[in-house]
Amino acid sequence: MTGDRNRGWTRRQALRSMALAGAAAAWSPRSLAQERRIGVALVGLGGYAKGLLAPALELTKHCRLAGLVTGSPDKLPEWQGKYGIPDRNVYSYEDFHRIADNPDIDAVYIVTPNHLHKAHALTAAAAGKHVWCEKPMAMDAAEGEAMVKACRDHKVQLAIGYRMQHEPNTRRFMAMATERPFGRIIKLRADAGWFGWRDGADEAWRLDPARGGGAMYDMGVYCVNAARYSTGMEPVAVQAWDETVRRELFKGVDETMRFRLEFPEDIVAECVTSFGRNLNTLQVDCERGWYTMSPFQGYEGNRGRASDGTVFEPQLGKKPRMQAEQMDQDARAILENRAPRVPGEEGVRDLRVLDAVFASAKSDGKRVEIARG
Figure (cartoon, rainbow, N blue to C red):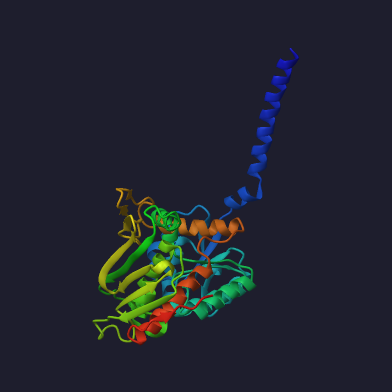
């Protein structure tokens, strides 16, 4: 009888404890953080912001579109009408610093031409706002390091918009760099590019060297980042060749750049990036097999296969699901007070490689060692 009473008491106590635990979880800082949504201001209202980021913010669970910053005020009526952004949350590049006084905005996503990234990041950091920045994060490694320092000094996060590092098959390739299912990595190839040119003022900056134009800044960074995450290593040297064909159009910027990265363990990455060829393949060759993705930087996820018959199918669905996943991950990092998946330091590492690529290309393929942090 006593044993039955004890068992009944234990069950009642267990149920009560479970209820209390559930209530505590519901009111825990982590849960409260997850319920709150980060207010995001888009800095730059060009094609990527309009076509992908703003629609993606309508799909996110942990962040929302809260503000607009633009140098083109004629774009504002359409944006404000579509997304319901009040005048108090709208800024020009000149009065962007006033965002410091706006509690609706927690973070900014910088989607401006490359040469503006540093200035906008420093303004946002000084205003106490977290910074998300499109790739490449800056014009060179020195600018990137200044952005990292500013965000650290002002105690705000800095995340780089490498959407592929939030894509499931890419993350599988990153894990394989350590797991090495086919043995030692011997070589890899990463090619990224597209043929043609976009019309319109929003894209004209991509032909301007002073504003960070050219294929290497735009698409080559995918190759560099892929080579790094596929090996899990930092390259030590590079040789590069500018193979621009349409020089009447690409004046002072690269249409096509071919480069060879040297990694530890005698691993070599052969890469091509271009505005004159459709390219979208990553292949890793190992001593007992291979694995590949094509596309490896698609907007609707990556598709791949391996020499053992494994197939990697896209998992995120139609665009802009990938951008929504990226921004939700970065918002959760803020809410949970942890480092973002792709911090500013990751962007700086790629910029060190780009610095060396440009230096080598100017000397027609001279081997250039890559600076270490």
